[in-house]
Image (cartoon, rainbow, N blue to C red; front, side):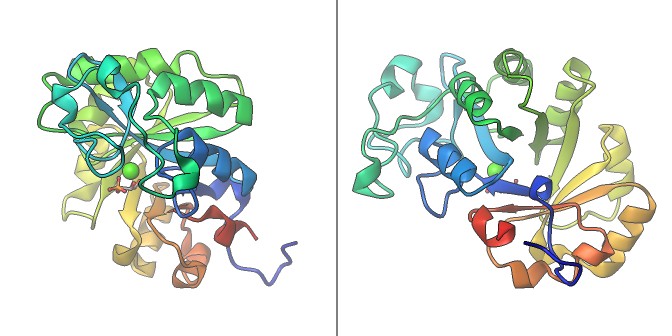
Length: 248
Ligand code: G3P
Ligand code: CA
């Protein structure tokens, strides 16, 4: 139980990075279920297109690191990935986890009462931004009433295109550190949210963004003590592999 001396995020400010990826294979249904078990309300996940325009939840541009298969996403189809094991690389007890589509994940998040920060990855094999953003829109349209969606990306063009399709959604610009012209870049999307590498946070930047009504969340921190001084300066949230650490 929190008391007035605790400095930390509220439950709504904690997002499980690729699900609870410290305890389950990233970007799988198991990782999203683990996030819910840890008490998270939000998950962050990554999306990309296969060669046949199926929108899947995966971080890399190939299946090599996180599945039993091999190959670039652009050379694979839904049929190719259907039988890949996306859990054993992490721990044999997760054998049989599949590489999910965003549509499948949205369905499970609805059952779990979770909301999602959908990070649009822009990979070289993506032939068209229009295909990518329309696939995201098609997948999120079936979300349950308790599933809130926000979009994030390192690619401002993806956020701009998504904003045209879904002007009501929060769009978060991802930066490793704020570029000198960050304010103009944000206005062009338009967005009032920055997701920043926690190593680039400063009290001064948070005070300025808070004054300008711009939200800043930090990625990817797995140590609550490294953010402790930032909550009082207006930090709006954290993206973490281990939500339990920030929720207890
Ligand atoms: O949401 C921020 C974070 O997920 C960005 O980095 O490489 O883990 O997708 P990455
Ligand atoms: Ca991500």
